Image (cartoon, rainbow, N blue to C red):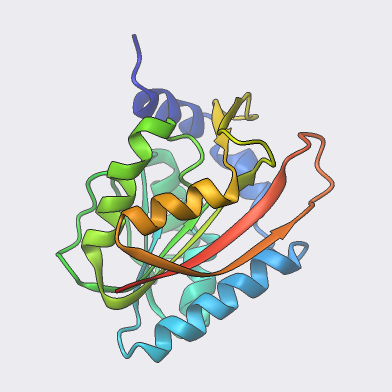
Length: 209
């Protein structure tokens, strides 16, 4: 049976050009996401450590945005085809293939981690270990911005994402997982994207103790 990592990698390898064409505008049509990322970048700069990882960076558009916002940003992605595209699209920036559960980053090295809808394919039981890895690479006072699909029900909901199966989360449950990993959630934005899926979009900012 194919593990979800292999399934996700293969699925995203197969949609690189389409995915990149859909998101090349760097959130010009997504003001809530754009402004949360801007707030994240400002707060990371304020820590004095501008080094930040865009985990699950896809075609690299948000890595480039973080760079333009003053961060020493680099991108990591499970999909080698996405990494190849990002390197071609943004040759001045660093992109590497990596799993979010095993980041090629030293302990406490980063001022920030951006996880923009990149945790959505992780089965709920595996999410605590993934969050622990994001915490490992953050310096004290470092920030995580996690964006994901939200459900108003009490439990995570598995759904058929257009690329590969994904999960939506109750925001309070997700915040509890962040707290359990040693982070302090201190800001959240929940909004209705008027999508056909019926889920809300959620953005949660958390800081390492």
